[in-house]
Amino acid sequence: MCGFQNETTLYLTIGGGKMKMGFCETDITPDAPVTMVGFNRADNISKGVLDCLAAQVTVWENNGLYCLAAIDNIGFNKKESDQLRDLIGLEIGEGREKVMISFSHTHSAVNTAVEKGYYEMLCIKICNAARKAKESMENVSIGWDNAAAEIGVNRRSFGKVDRRVGVLKVCGENNDDTKLMILRLTAHANVLKRDNYSISADYFGTVRRLFSEKYHCPVMIIQGSAGNIAPKYYCSTIVPIDGRGEAYINSVTALDDIAQEVLSEAEAVIHSIKAYSDIHVSTYSKYITLKSKVPSMAEAYKIAGEAAENCGIDGSKWLDEVKELNENNINFQTECLEVQYFCIGNWCLCGIPNETMTEFAIDIEEMLLNPYFYFNGYTNGCTSYFPTKEEYDLGGYEVYWAMLIYFQDYGRVYPYHRESFDEITKFVAAHYSINGFDTMMIGG
Image (cartoon, rainbow, N blue to C red; front, side, top):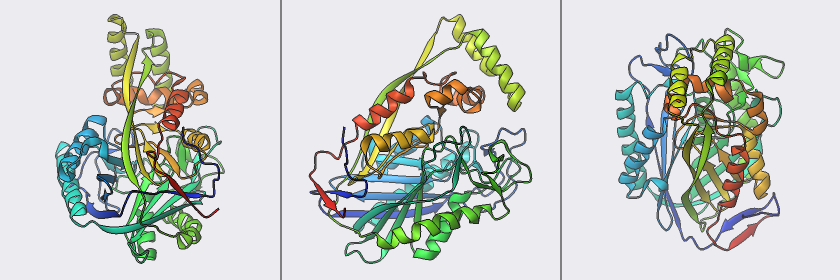
């Protein structure tokens, strides 16, 4: 396990050689009404576009090629995501494990599992963007730091919230003009609620626009562990479940309110960041197998009844699947989970294809004593919620009921075992590495 003893220290890995980076953004807004994703509605067809959806691709060269992409979508299933990563890998001449995809988790985007034509179009556009990003690579310098903003509320326990605004600034080789800014934020991208039928990037779009106008450079946003973090501001004609209580603010300007909050807190940090050119970049994946039990029929009927009563969820197909598994004496299911790391010095994005709760990120940061280690969900796909042990015991939508809707995409009928939270946090921390390079301390 790698530990950093001073949370105000910036560590740079030395010996990576000059770093190059290329960037390309492409518009992935549908040009016709499509099936939306994010809300369990009988009528889910879009009715116009509020703002454009984007896919952003960076390609990095530093003893190899690496790709970090961000897509305005709730998150593909694993099959779709892996297929796209393979295609991007072919474009840059690397394997899937050198390609990380982060999804914004906007609830106002396209259901790619239904809209196959849109998914195919999106893959073509993103691969073209990867090629252009590779062709546009130039020498760069990089620096990073954290700000803190109050943009999210823990909708499950009103407890922990990851308030870090991670800022990575990519400048020219001589620390001159800013080429790109990467922000890491943590809050569900559902400021727009179930009464919204317009395609939208949600608050990711407004934050990108505001920062781009301010700093005259493209802005990429990475979603954190936001499985139980609702946006503090929301915009709706109804009061949703994750918008009840004094902590939430309903506002017609909610999207801009979040963007202004992030900008006001990040400005001082951005101004003070110094960039360095001799920094090591690496991307690698590790794999862990997690188990989930198959409930008995008595347990299944109880869960289905609660889901119907509390959320109006029809669990009949899920019950059929559970029944078939029981009849075949299948007592548990397993999943081989990819944990991917994208590291620049001790700035690290690490993610899994789940809706992870914010406690994952906070606990792992504390294990590593590294405030620049960001554990994220929605990475290389978006499968089931991944609850903490405490939330597992409380149950509810994020633990059980969502399984009734999306179990076919997840490949499981039940959440991971209760102890999986401890398993994955320890695994992530133990496999974090700066690849043995010496470190240089900047600041104090």
